[in-house]
Length: 76
Image (cartoon, rainbow, N blue to C red):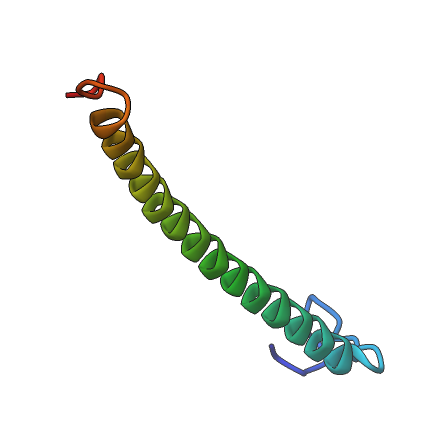
């Protein structure tokens, strides 16, 4: 911006502490973003663990039906 006296827009000094406040907000946003990324990774680990556990449970159920239930499982 030009700093001459003929400039159509007057220049006002920035309020005291503006840089400090922006730094604090940036730091807070970065911390929240990292927490969400960690939570998303935890959620992905949980869902993959549940999928694996569900597959094992279905396999055990199929074995039980074949051996003790007297037949083939319904899903073939």
